[in-house]
Amino acid sequence: MEDYDNYIISFKWKIIYVLLAGAAIFGITYLFYRNSFLAGGLSPLGIFYLRHRRKQLVLRRKNQLNLQFKDLLTSLASSLSSGNAVENAFSNALGDLLVLYPGDDACIIRETRIILHKLALNVTIEEAVGDLARRSKLDDIVNFSDCISICKRSGGNLIVAVKNASGIISDKIEMKQEIETLLASRKFEQRILNIMPVVIISLLSVSAQDYISPLFMTNAGKAAMTVSLLLLAAAYLISGKIMSIRL
Image (cartoon, rainbow, N blue to C red; front, side, top):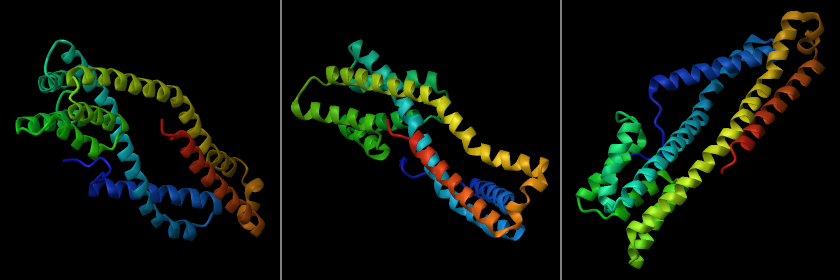
């Protein structure tokens, strides 16, 4: 079963990511220092990009699962409102999800099938959903799992509790989607601002070589370019942190 905090990158994509990162490092280093040996020497640092890329892929997969989980909750709430038992509601939800996500590529399809398989083996509903919550570590799934567990322990009406929890959590996920939509334009602006200094230096290097050449020929110029590069790196990291605030 899939651990959503661990993403295995294939060897092919590892090579692609390292080469792309190495090429980017070479290009930026050469642009700022006009030194092929320095650029070539720093290019192998692209291997450290794999760790950053893995985190991005883990986050993207979790976000996809969270959005797909909303569709599962919507289907569960609809099925429970029709008077179905929780176990039957999951079975009906799988049919609805297969319409929304044809094939087996969607994480929520695999996870719903795992839950149904466990229920067929007489595993309790709270254990089946709890396993998904432990592996995904997503707040919405954990809250849903806790709701089922508390209801089972306290002897409450599981169908009503699951239906109410599904509605509340589904609304919460929808609100997150709306906020992400509002932030999308800001994230695009952030990416543009991050690459603009590199674009400007590239344009000056082509159109005004005499004007910009002292930056590469003198020690003061090299120091200024080093400080500029460090500031650009800091701006990239800080803006990334701001835009990735957990909702």
